[in-house]
Image 1 (cartoon, one colour):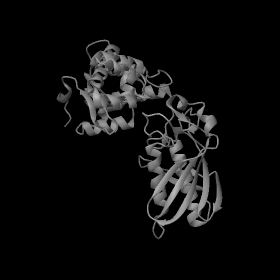
Image 2 (tube, rainbow, N blue to C red):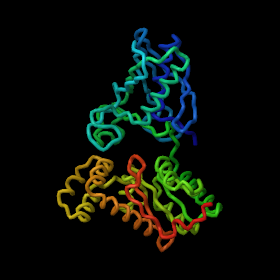
Image 3 (cartoon, rainbow, N blue to C red):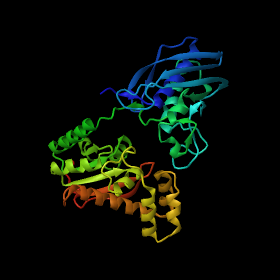
Length: 366
């Protein structure tokens, strides 16, 4: 299946095209973008509008590849203003069709445009790349806009999360990889087979690239084959590991996925299973004996917001979630093996909870 690129990549490409138009006087047909994983791609430029010698706007068309994404084909634009002052300042704002965050618990603080850190980093990198052949860099402002963004937002979960007025500009690497259930499960099965063929009896199951990266930092001596990305396929991955005879697994998670796994949900995608903060609030009350904590957790906008409260005041609740996730894994395994453990990362990659199976450090990893 064909991969595509995120709204964040589209925004970075539009910003780069607009700045190139201001610096060179020519509208580029396409711009080369470097994804956050180091890969490069040429992105076609859809349109360009020059307002003055210092202001230009360009758009590109979001291409999600074969992924069923509501923003596929959407026009993503950037209006760039080139300032007279020399410097490296890049001020990024959201214009028409870009949502604004109104509730806590997201990667972007309330009151700001819903442009996530990954896309912001890509935009800054591409702006800097434009100035490489110039005599010094000038400060710029970049306004991201999505002409049809408000209508598209109605097809997303943004409203429930408190993002109003448009879509979010997203992306962790910049690449959209198509979602095929059969293909993903086949990939998990293959990865486990490779690990077994490499002589490994213990694996780390991560839910994505970021949790995998943090897990590899936590266990730097374990080979690459020991890290298995399972996405949302919790139950199926445990069953595959059991069928292949693995002795132990450790789940490497962020808090939102950990809460879903703690509830025993076999598949953790938002479209399949709504995150139930009421259950988390109930566990918090049971563990702490603190009655008011129930309401505080139940009113949280996201698991991230709840995590921030718990890590400061009630870390024992995070441990309880981790233990419940382990119990769910054992139940899906249907027996004593594979034995399970869990690590829950904070959003900087530190282990907020860590529980490893008894034989975890006995693996031959030399």
